[in-house]
Amino acid sequence: MTFPIQSNSFKTAITEKRPLSLQEINEDQVSKIQDCLETEVTSLLCVAVPSNQEDIVTMLVCLANKDSFCEADEDLVAETFRCMTPILHRAKAYEEEKRLREECQSLLTVAKSLFTHLDDVTLLLREIMAQARHLTKAERCSLFLLDKERNELVAKVFDGNVAEDGTETSIEVRIPANQGIAGYVATSGELLNIHDAYAHPLFYRKMDETTGFKTR
Image (cartoon, rainbow, N blue to C red; front, side, top):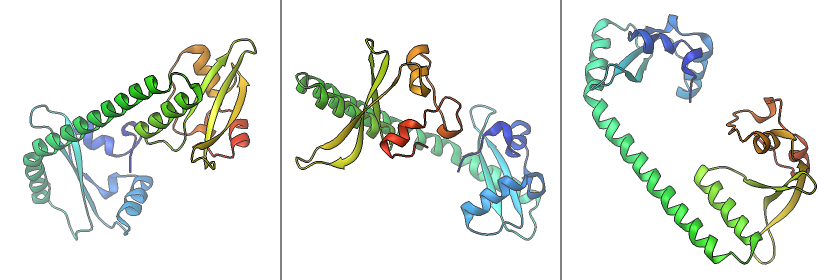
């Protein structure tokens, strides 16, 4: 569960570094908390915990459904998690290091495949996309190549179906080089990270209609 900091009630706890009660949190956030906890929230205490080294809030601790929260609860949470903060930071650092090691290993695998499949572009593209999909934990991956003669973007879209030889089947999709999100990125060179594709004005729906895949 994630909340944009700038547009929710928890921003007050972070910026002012003070506890929040249920009455100070808007209904939308309360509803999401209830969905996460799978229970009705009748009382809530949210305590901002700063880092030991810097006066920056690194976590928010939320306690729910006590008859009455008091200042002693606030102090207990603050002191307990102040001691836990260094441990959590080390755990996060370990997870990040582990993630980077896995990514480096995947990149080495891709590099090996580049030399193995230099004589077969189709196999090479399939391997690159499979590793990109694995690294980003994405459902699908498409790689667009620019056809300068036709001024089109050509995508090899792997649909997940397996052929008799055990390889993924694929279809070729062509779109105008200036069409959709891919076209914009290709012509502008700008990186786009879009959380809701269908809500974006540049989204090219015909791609989903052609492949049968719903882009989120």
